[in-house]
Amino acid sequence: MQFSDLKLIKALVLALDKKGYTSPTPIQQQAIPHILAGADIFGCAQTGTGKTAAFALPILQMLDAKKQAGKPKTIKALILAPTRELALQISQNFLAYGNNLGISHTTVFGGVSQLAQTTALKKGVDVLVATPGRLLDLMNQGFIKLNTVEYFVLDEADRMLDMGFINDIKKVITKLPAKRQTLFFSATAAPQIMKLANTILQNPVSVSVTPISSTASLVKQSVYYVKKENKKLLLKHVLKNNNIEHALVFTRTKHGADKVAKELNSNGISAEAIHGNKSQNARERALKGFKNRTIRILVATDIASRGIDVDKLSHVINFEIPEQAETYVHRIGRTGRAGSSGIALSFCAQEELNYLKDINKLINQKIDVSSHPYS
Image 1 (cartoon, helix red, strand yellow):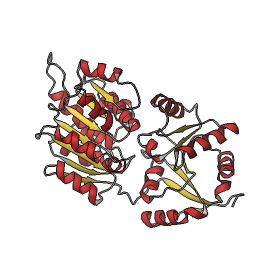
Image 2 (cartoon, one colour):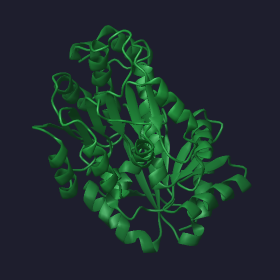
Image 3 (cartoon, helix red, strand yellow):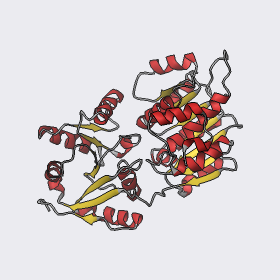
Image 4 (cartoon, helix red, strand yellow):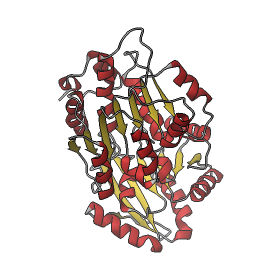
């Protein structure tokens, strides 16, 4: 199947061709026709499945059909995302896909001055991508009104709930028009997710691909059993001996991310840490450096990792095993994307064995064990 088979307009197909995309992913094949037909959607899809395009493309097409020359721009589409990185990634996709349509958009998120954001809002925008906190703040200040929203997207709803945004989401929903199209995406269909979905969706169509229990088939997974105090030595060994040119390294804590990045730099390995305590500018610089490969290693916490989408990322390294098995699936899903292969390496200390056991149970496979000098 080609994108043109989904009845997308020529301008969108050309934009996709320019990015090298010709065949839609399963979530795009399932969701786009229903969204264009006006249905609410409950989408269960993990990161790396192409779900941003699954909602961005039909929204852009529907907005293009409703363009009215000379009319003031009002917010017609609202996309709510849990982190600033993901919000920026979504915004970049809207820019790339809608480059020839003349549909304006802006992104609002916390951690930076609001001046540039409010300036853009005053000019009028068609599409608003936002994180919950800054959105509510600007609504309270009178910069944003949601009474003209026709399309509402709640992306990564599971992460929203994990981060404690449920009350913020409810406040936003009360300000939306009752008559709207709502697109709800989550990596899981846990009971609390379904409860939220049932309160905001009207007769939704369910689309589901790559359930949370699965890991990318193109990702080769290995585990290294190692003492906690030897993990730094093992990381340097792995980076040196496996000829790894580019890797995303995960830690559980912000302090841990800083320590790992500092240790790598002291050994001549270019690295940056990215986490919630870093300023937005610092996070954007680190992510830009990682994407253009001036930075070899990006060390991230899980909250900061949402929205990190790097082409042809070869390796993900779990310096620390995550406490939640589902988080492991999200982490390694950063590689092996869009048909590329990838490698996921995990360092497991004695005190993390139960976490690994839960992961093996969730993904229904035993991860291969690798030998090393520091076991």
